[in-house]
Image (cartoon, rainbow, N blue to C red; front, top):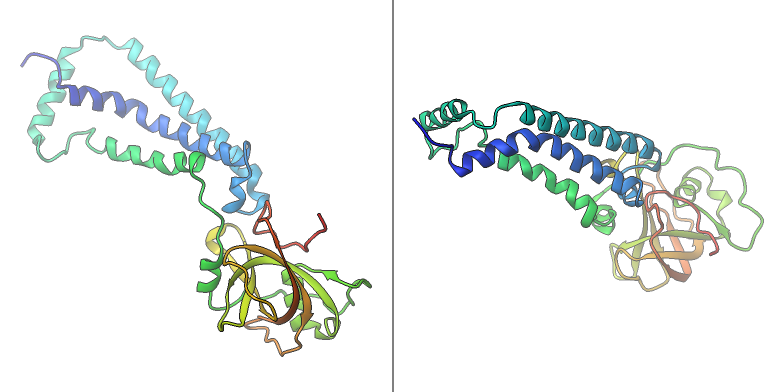
Length: 272
């Protein structure tokens, strides 16, 4: 049999050698883009994992470039008119049938779809988890038992992390009675029209294991879902169980704010 392989087979042969290393380069570049050139990675994992992501991105890019280099060197060294090898490959493809797509390179175009998530990271980063996740989580995060017996700072309004406010309501309720506090979180709808929730999501490792910290808000109209707000008010004093700690708060002031740089880092609100 004489003649060159069909154009489709030539194209498949080209991709089969460069496809895998190219995917490594694209994936590594996506990791580096989200960790070095931006803070997008904070929407997916804890801040402490950044060095590991950077190292992984560098390693993937290095392996991909090495693979591309090795493939190019191999092609430069092999004869460009090896018709016998081409004919053998063509006959092998015919033996398996053109209509069934069982040739050696048949899965290569599908493999290129693996580049889509990496390209998405670079150009269309999804938002951080919000009210949808919080509302689907039936039980609030279990608060670590800690020494919440110490009194709050002697100030008219005490800024608190949401987890500390919840922890004090369970383990040190006497420290909250009559004290005005200020909390930061995102909004989700409540169980009734006159209540809503202020939430934070806490990560153990990544967004897949996010746990909800939640405070039930009374006394003011709810802002839009997923909007971020600072609320000022006092604990209502209702009993809070350790198994499902959702304290209620009577709020007299709500201040809309922008989403923090790290939405999963539960910290007290700051002035400015």
